[in-house]
Length: 386
Image (tube, rainbow, N blue to C red; front, top):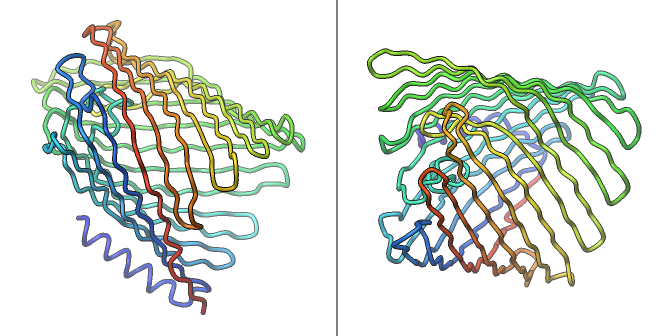
């Protein structure tokens, strides 16, 4: 499906925008080389390995005064020196278009991605040894309307499917619809209400699941000063789950809880920093629904026009909403880095990453340290107007 769909989009993209005001062609390639002393995040029998990645990407875009369309495609290539069973070549493409009128904005996103389940292990199953490949396809329409000078409403939809290459994961189909109202109370403060409804169906060897989730939140954004800002949301969620075994036995359950997404940001002349706190639920690739509590910190500083340093850290706790056991997984990640811009379109960065994963039920405690060198190259490409 990947090639026919991609070339069909490319044809429609060119045909529908033949009178474009501006065309651009650009690209990027960000090769990196890392050494990780516990590449599979094991508690024992650890394996250290060299890991090289490169993601060559091309993007073609067209812009009008009130519309913008882009199509990007590339490959994510991973190579390991010892763990060669983890080597992958994963294609992807993304199509996005927006159209604006005096008071409205329409958007549409189409995406196709092949990736390794290991990339999302910390947020999903905690399994860093899997070599399963997941194909994700999604459609995401959006609409935004300016009701008054102070009021904005928006509607966002999403439909996506995930298909895994191994049977220890569950193929799934997800649908969601959200609406949001925002009111500008003062020049610095706005707030509103957000409503989300979603459905996720997954099919695996052990069971079939059907999860309906609803979330009602109050949202806010407050610019404390020119350098400080606070934004976030807090609400109430409801989860209605249904699990069916291969023999036809069905178990239904309901769960309620709170949702939270808070961010405090600082932006100075040369220094930026942020603090984030969140609680959310998300379907896992094994048919469960995970609840995650996460705290994140970030800091960066520009020492000169070409030299900058940053540090990012997070602590996350993951548990199963549909499982009544006390099993929890804690993930810690700390990563300082330094970046040097040696030309207008290229830079080099050196980073260190510490990871830790604790699983209460299994009684495991794994950690790893990695050093990575990355060359970031963004090709400005060509521009043409007509």
